[in-house]
Length: 216
Length: 216
DNA sequence: TTCGTATCGATAATATTATATCAAAAAGAA
DNA sequence: TTCTTTTTGATATAATATTATCGATACGAA
Image (cartoon, rainbow over all chains, first blue to last red):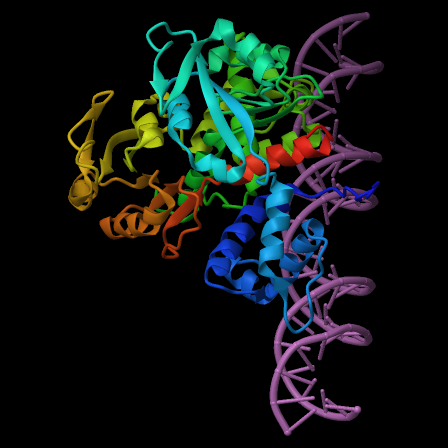
């Protein structure tokens, strides 16, 4: 079945709105709402209704119906599929510090299709311990583990100085994507997908907005 | 001296690039580089040189010099000032779960002008404990603490269900900005600055890019 | 001192993203 | 069935962000 789904370029801004749509739709769904209009969605997400329709048209093959709106459950399925929430994939965390252990202990990402299965570190005091039933293993075991379990995603929570080296090891081990929380821009081969979570930049925006309010 | 600095609207995209510029400039500075051209910066940040000049013009009053480029140390000072890294302000964390304790234990944000001084929770098993010398207090003490220490920023790391209530308490207590890590859109009065860190959306972008590479 | 050149900063052109407008579709009432 | 109304989806417009172009500046060499 060569569905030949035209893979149009979907902007980051649109992707970023998808979880908002999804969240609201799930809420409505649990209230028993069957159909919903773009106007209602728009008001709750604080965007324009036209934008809602454009966004939804990009990820859902089912068109909205005049006078009725969009089918809530169908939208949920389509958005979840688009976001990859419909198939859970495994991930490992490298760096078992505070943030790394938080990832180990947090089950919430299962709702986002993400299952963290183990952590890795070089600190002998941490290696061997478990958090929420998930082991902390030594970095030396990383390569074999990734290969054996075919892990597609590595989450990097090590200090800045170690980040590039860790990323190299992950790439070598065979992960296809990296979610980086170290405050450093990293270099990866072109076929590897990387997203650096720049909390400093976020904080900067917060500070910037505070500044604009004058009260600093 | 009414400098009357025209506070132009600086886009989020520009603000997000500032930490990248800063990081690179600090690296160059430590290597002893005195002057640097927009072209060189552009190559390292992977943006166009024109954009670099535009961005820098927005935050630095000192102009670049033809044939030489921009003064590195001066740029660092100006960017840090713009980002608010030059004056450290205090913050509290609400929710002493994995992520909340990670914030308590992480000193790195001091470089970004942020000092986390205490955490709050309702769990009696956590209240009274300390992480990295910082106390975990009971939610009931939040109001008095914020008022007494004049805390401007609250970091929310509670589960989704509790997030709105916590935010209300923070606002009532008198914080002026909120950094929200709960996966929920929250309502705040207009004079309060809020930034929701939507990790689900980030993850979605990662998944989206992976999808585009076809190898899913 | 003069010249050649690297670099900036201003302006114009393009690309991207969001909003406004409106004809067409279809549910539900009369 | 026919009419009214809501809502979609397509197209046009506007706003924003990025890139291209080019004259002006000043460093450093001759």
